[in-house]
Structures are given as structure tokens and as C-alpha cells.
Amino acid sequence: MTMVERHLDSFKLVSKKSLIFFFSMTSIMFLMSWFFVLRTSSRPYFIDHNLLPSSKLFSTLEDSMFHTKVPNVESSFGNRAILVDNEDVEDESEASKSNENTKCSNRNDVFLLKVFMYDLPSEFHFGLLDWKQDGKSVWPSVRTTIPGYPGGLNLQHSIEFWLTLDILASEIPNAPKAKTVIRVQNSSEADIIFVPFFSSLSYNRNSKPTPHEKKTRNMILQEKLVKYLTSQEEWKRSKGKDHLIIAHHPNSMLDARMKLWPATFILSDFGRYPSSIANVEKDVIAPYKHLITSYVNDDSSFDSRTTLLYFQGAIYRKDGGYVRQELYYSLKNEPDVHFSFGSIQKDGIKKATEGMRLSKFCLNIAGDTPSSNRLFDAIASHCVPVIISDEIELPFEDVLDYSEFCVFVRTSDAVKENYLINFIRSISKEEWTKMWNKLKEVEHIFEYNFPSKEGDAVQMIWQAVSHKVPAIKLKLNKFRRYSKSPPSLEKDLKPIHVPKIFW
Image (cartoon, rainbow, N blue to C red):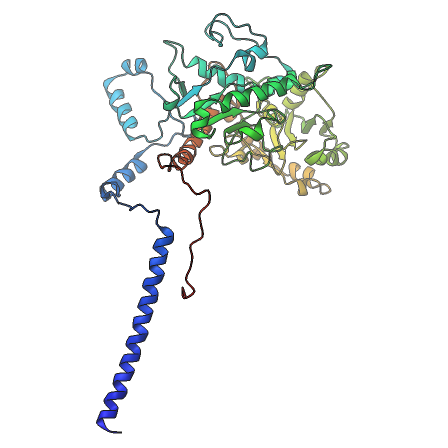
């Protein structure tokens, strides 16, 4: 091969590689250009470098995180904000003031929930308690007049009553400083929009039709509520995402819930809700109000509580409640087990109080729904709860470790022959005493009070709601992204034509 031929071959090889490289780069550039065509929204994106994190900011955050004292949930209120009364601070020494100021400056968990409450007509709330409106105000004066709430089973779902009272109390001049919630009159300043509909009471009192009526009073109130809410500017502005509605009774809001589901619900459980309507990420679980009187000055012991295992209630239930009858037949002949039918009729509450206070363990078994008031009656009685309900959601579980004062048993294990009774008998006196002491430490968390008290059920519910606020604000901010953009002329995006030689 001559020298000329060799140069020609080399030239062909280089040319071939150059062509390959050229077409490769062209293809890459073509793909990238189509990527930007697909990605862009016709507007340029600019980065504000002042918003980028700096090492100084991170160091400040790290210092505050490592030096902030985290409150203990056992002694106070978990990570709830505690507001200091200025009058109390003035009485402290200079050293105490300095120490308090240091704590306040380091704390990042201070949060006062600002609530806007609709002035709904009284027929939706206190009018259901036969309260008569006096004058223009749709609210009773909680300083002087608090309408009575019906007892019995009505009381266990009275959450709406206690929360509404707490909001109204936040407006009383010169009253003790609100701990967790304050009512605001401008809805744009609020963290949450509260809907004061006593839905559980409405169900309990008005769900039975009267002769010649096609709709119950409860259904009519729900229809009026939906019409009222959806006509409000607050609802239109957020599509209900920042609204708070209480539907603690499993059958309350049966009609309206399907239309008002973007709101946050306060519920007893999710047993009768599809996950698309209610779920643990969006909604709040609140405790029942226990019917049994709290066990004050409890000086009982493992030995003085002579009944090992206690259950009194409805035995034959539908849905997940089948396990009750299974356990009844397996435990009814155990000498130190009380397992019988019972109700609130004929001194039922009094008998249950006596029975629970004499028992070491109290069964909380799934019924028609995953939860029941029996769990909170057991806590009030310092009877260690044995929870057999696989689908149960428990209130405040983000700050409470229920395994410290409850025993959990899977349903599949509980129905096995002798499994449950052998398991309960295997729990030592020391283990039980530890759980019993813990019950006495946490029982105040499940108490409803007016005025609300530090770390009680009312304030814990507000804390749980405040934990939802960041996610609510995130949804609202995303919802408003294109609120200032002119409406699109196209209902749907047209597909982009891809050339045949795209690849």
C-alpha cells in the first residue's frame, strides 16, 4: 500500500468518526430541545439567590434545635405551645424573667391556633339544646349561661359542644390567656375555619322521621349546612380545604360528608368512611367523652382488683364485631373473668363503674366500628385496656405511646383457643403496676373540661388540628398557583407532534 493510499484510509476513518460524533451530538441536542419544549410553561424561571440557604442560616437552625428544651408529654402537653401570662411574668424575679426570655427565644414550637368561626344560626348548634336566642347574638354568653348537654350515650360524642365553648371563651375580656386557640373575626387571618354544627347531637335527636315527613330534621339541617357553606366566600376561596367539621358520631353527617369532604373532619374512627373521604393524613381522631366517673384518689392495687378480665356491653355485633361472640364463648366459664351483656339502662353505668374499678384488665373489642367509648371508660377507671381491634385509630398517638398503658392483641390471635387468657395471665404484677401508674399519669389527656385545662382533651384536639395546618397551607398555596393567570382557552392540552425521526 502506497503512502497516498494510507493517508486516504486515515482520512476516511477520521471522517467516519467525526460524522458519528456529529450525529450523536445532534441527536442529544435535539432530545434536549424537545425536553425543554415539553417542560416549559412559556415563562422563564428566575432564581432569587437571596432565598438560597446559607451556612449561617443552617448553623442558627442547628443551634436552636439542639438547645431547645422539648417538653415532656407526661408532665404537660407534648410539643404544644404554652403561652405565658404577662401578669405572672411580672411577679417573677429578674433571674426568672431572664431564664424565661431565654426559653422563649429558643423555642420553635410556639403556636396559637387562630380560628375563624361562622356565626351559624342557633338551630345548628345551641338551639339543638333547646337554648333560646336572646337578642341578635346567635351565641349564649358563656360567662353566665351554658346550656346543659343531654346525658347518657349522647354525652360520649359531645366533642362539638366542648370545642365551641372553648372558642367562645377565648373572646371573654380579662379571662385567663387562651392556651391553644383564639377566635379571630377576619377569616383571612385564620389558620382554620371552624363550622359549629352539632352534628352528633343532631343525629341522636333528629334522625328518626316523623309521620308524613319524607326527610328527617337531621337530613334537612345537613342540606341547609351544605348550601350555607358552599355559598360563603371562605369556602369558595379554598374549596373547603381549610375548614374544620366535627362528625364524631359514626352516623353523623352521613349525607353532607360526601359533599364537604375536602374539609378536615374530627372523628371517632374511620370505620364508616371510604379512605378517599376521610383518612389519618387529612383528619383528626378525638377521644370519646367517658361515661364512667373518673377514679379520684385511686388506692387500689393488683391484689385488690380481684377480677382479671372485664367486659360488659353488646355481645352480638355485625361487621368486625363478630370477635365479641367468639370471645364470649371461650371466656364465659373462666372463674376470674366477667364477660356479660350490659347497657346504660337499669344502673348500667353504675354497675360498669364498680366492675371496672375491681378489674385488672378491661377488654376493648371492635364492634360495629373499630372504636368504642369502652376504651376511655377503662382509662378513667385505671383498668388496663386490652385492645382487640385491628383497624382502630387512636387519638393523639403522635405524642402518646399507648403500649405503655394498653395491651394490644391481634384479632387473629385473640380467637385462637386459650391464647388470650393465657397471655393475660402471663402479665406479671410488676408489669401491670407499671401500666396502672401510667394510666393515672395520662388520664387527664382524655378529660373534657370547661374552661379547658392544661393538656386536657380539648387542648389536645386543638394541638392535633394545629399539626394539620402546615399540610393545609401547602394544599392551599398549590391550589392558588395559577389564580392570577388568565383562564386557558383550551380545556385540554393538545398532544405535541413528535417527528418520525425523533429517535
